[in-house]
Length: 455
Image (cartoon, rainbow, N blue to C red; front, side):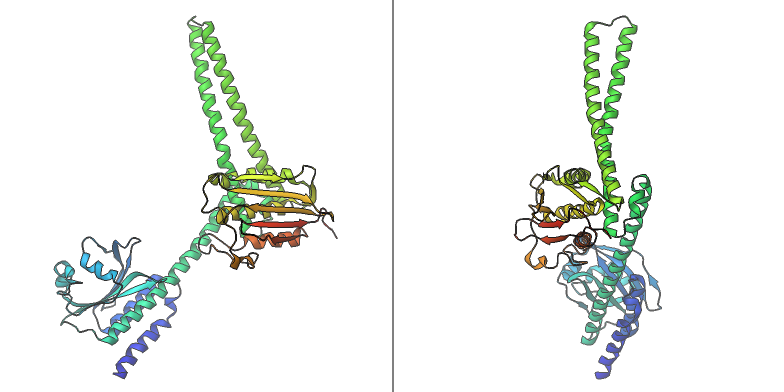
């Protein structure tokens, strides 16, 4: 008995130590697992199956036969066709079918599958990933009916656990590949917008800034399309009115009423064109101002009211779905001699954090952001940023500026946003930032020198 147990333990150790399990290649890992099952259990067929998202069907990922032939043909079993088998799977326990053709859990396969292939016994163990059953490893015996032993059941369950480990490595590798692909896609987008971001690109040393820039460019382009589209439609309408009045004039039927109607239409269209083209011009001017300021690492006089006005307008494409209301309390006389690009980056990160975290579960029209700017008694500039979102949990407050800390791991959060805010404030702007106390939303206080010290 001891030698039998050692036999299975040795086989499991060999598989567990295989490099293929943790490399992320699910095809290669599956071959290692299935080969081990065939050889150790001395069975003729073994396969890996995985559920779809709603557990209404299960699909064969790979089948191995005793001659080490592997197949990845996509065989799919539907719950509606095999209700008893799926009901047994839902118990998330091993299916031990010594007489598979008669067992209630597996006899649905007898006419079309088990009998034609001569399969007499089945042993199916659940594969779990992150606490959930995601599939099975299916062992099939051909020949005389087989009484599965306790060692064989335990061995198969351990193989299923290793399959879950391989699946985790596979998903991690896919996530890394997706991240690489996203970075490449972003680089392509930046190249297409070279006319707008050529100066900024050299300064974007961190991925968080690249994402911010990409969103800014595509968002402004989308915003500009609206007034331009309205202007095109208005022009088309005016063209039709002009053709109509020419036709009436050519026939000698032009009356005062016709002329008045045409002139009224012209006035309306001109008003529409003026409003929408002015809007497009303002958007482009705002975008140009943001782009230039983000790209220049030079000390300049910054009118903070104008800076925050341009920034909030440029981020409208990100905040409009929540109908965010801004309150900018800043005297037009407050001028900061500093790096405008760093300030843009800091408050872009704060606004995007409010959108991702603070306003996530709030309805449109309920979201507010207040930016208060004032001078301190010792001649510094104090900027307070405050939103009315869900706030920051007590257990996270001490970690908020830590590199790579995020509550959105796996959901788009990089954990760099607030670290960048602190780094830019301290190193580039020669100031300080702190998280304000209180549970009503997220608030940050910045103390910046009115004039940067230069060497």
